[in-house]
Length: 111
Image (cartoon, rainbow, N blue to C red; front, top):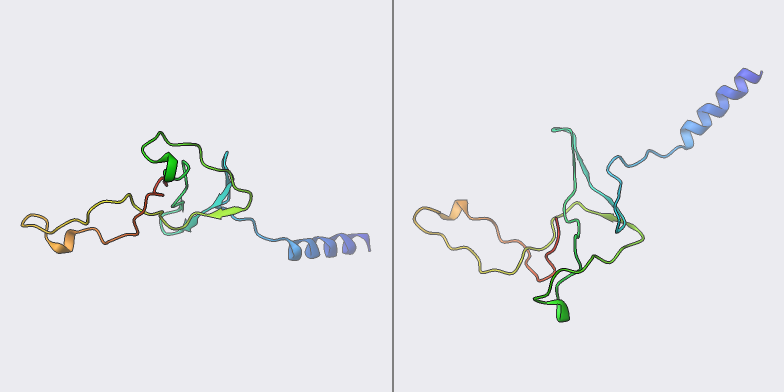
């Protein structure tokens, strides 16, 4: 009877267990999650902030540490690009080779 009870307890514990996120990482600034690339066996993280946004009074100054966060931050999309003029096609760099327009902004300090 004890064996059956232990087996039943094990089954219930396994049923109640939640799978852990294999992409969850703890950084100095907080916890992030990414995506699994199962085809290439990689963990992919996009848009990890590495400094505070250089806007307002912080424009044209050295980067400041990123403000820590408490919740789990999903890092699955790239952050905005630095503001720059859009590329123009020319003879050796035709339109099909141009990088598509991405969101741009001053808050661009992401990995």
